Amino acid sequence: MACLGKMIAAAVVAFMILGIASASDPDMLQDLCVADLTSDVKVNGFACKKNFTAADFSSKALAKGGATNNTVGSIVTPANVEKIPGLNTLGISMSRADYAPGGLNPPHTHPRATEIIFVLEGELEVGFITTANELFTKRLTKGEVFVFPRGLVHFQRNPGKVPAAVIAAFNSQFPGTQSIAAALFAAAPAVPDEVLTKAFRVGTKEVGKIKSRLAPKK
Image (cartoon, rainbow, N blue to C red; front, side, top):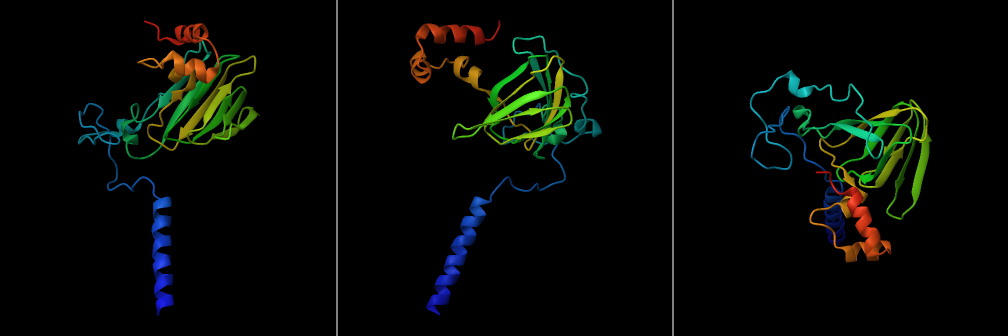
């Protein structure tokens, strides 16, 4: 009996550990919860609005490519919960990225989602970096799919001579995007120069130059 009791206790502990390890977002308790983007209520997501229509579940945000005449030669157009209120609590969203020839989507992360892209037009050089600082890259052509694991630093570059475009999907209604360069050199308040000079092993003049180039335009 004592042996059986120990086995049951061990099984209960294992079940509890497994339950904690596999925990994820809770299941929805209703059919839908259309985001009330005007509400002052702050929750982990958006409050639900009482009156909604089919238009809350639709958007033409990704129908056309965005302008790529900027410093990096790319533009990302989101179709997240802020664009489609009906996505609230559903855990999915999309975006479109357009690239001029030579355009770059600089190294960045999505802290709340894994990303999968489908190449609509052109070709891309893509890559992500693991926490062991190992780089995985691939050259993609029209029709190919590529996955960027959640939270890992990644980038996309158009090496071709014609424009490129992708459609991206995320397992989050609001995946968030953090550009590595902007986070470090254009934060407000600013990251202390002493931190950046030591981290990148450069002088304060170099840090100042980078900050000035990444500063938001007024």
